[in-house]
Image 1 (spheres, one colour):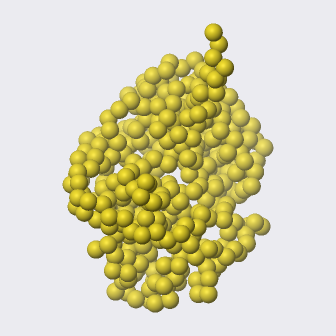
Image 2 (cartoon, helix red, strand yellow):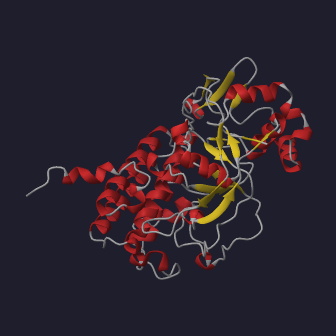
Image 3 (cartoon, rainbow, N blue to C red):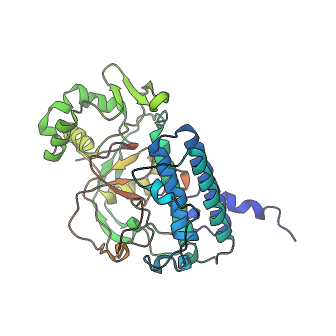
Length: 401
């Protein structure tokens, strides 16, 4: 007997951050089409060279790791330097470089062809983690590219939130990172391990403009003692007086939105989260306020346990304390990783050691922003970026000292 709800079941997981990591062919097919439609919608609003080049990477990634890749069904165990078939667009390597770009119509045709081939391959793919690995990674890669295009358009911003009381969490043991399990586990989440988390008190939501204005009005950008040496050097070199895209702080926040012919100025609500902050600015505010950034275990524990107590996350990416380290047992970088959205795989990248070691000169962002598709708003998600990165919707919350 036919089940009338069977065809609708895959769509139920389209925006589910747990279901999407275990997506089979049906759900992946819907998600890949959804992601490509979003990319094309954003591209219609921004055909600048930067936007065109990012869109090229969406089609190229699917070609390189799926339609051209003879070992795609081996997933992470594939030979990244193995032979590949010819691509459908001879000019794609030029499009990826710093020189020529495709006409928008030619790019849209390329994106239509690559998606059609990807969906045909998916329809005949075994339903196993290895065989579906590069399809899942393609979805993650394209959704991140779409988020980059959305960030470039500088929409109105995250929603305003009423100020909530800080939340106290008792000392406990916490499983930091993602467990060894079936499905897609992004590399930077590998692998779960127990850590001791002392008692801590944390903001219920990211810092808003009202609280940041106080820092600015008190001379925050002029007081070297509030900044790390690297942060103060950055402020001086950039000539910063406010976060990126801020045109006015005193008397209300006025932000630049859009770019090119779409550029305009808008007044932000004082209750909106602060955006486009570098970690240097987040640390300076904490020094001024007598507070600190949360550690990764504190942040992950809080967003995993605090929702029922009023904790809000996912409006902006959030800076945390400490340097960028892989978790114990992470192993080698998997083939086709999308952690840093590589333009093309580097020779030997799959064999590069990623064991824990001294902190490198990158910082960590946790969570997601309002530009992130809901299917990737996972409490274990993390990114490694420069502490000067301020072009994305990044903010922070603080902890009591």
